[in-house]
Length: 121
Image 1: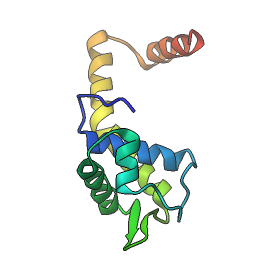
Image 2: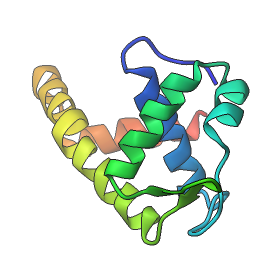
Image 3: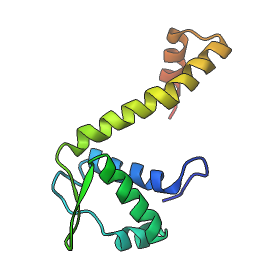
Image 4: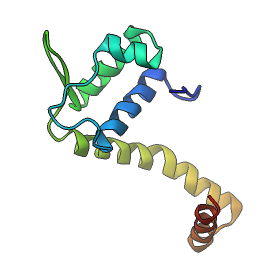
């Protein structure tokens, strides 16, 4: 995993775990990698992974069974989607609307440009 400088590493790891859940690789009730295992796999300090786990627990996306490990919570998928939607509305949409306004583009023009972009990928 390559980390971006624009976001805290623990949040990027949280996004990675969320993606695994959304993609169905980790399902509700599944045990996820331990702090140490994930730290080794991602080549990060276990304290950073622990910060991620604390953050995800605060959102009820994962939970800890003491002495056993961390597991994906019930409704984790919907909790992740709600969190991501909120992030999108609060962070991405304002930038999007600002940019289309500055560029003088209509929504139709944006759609045409995006469709063209997807076609050329």
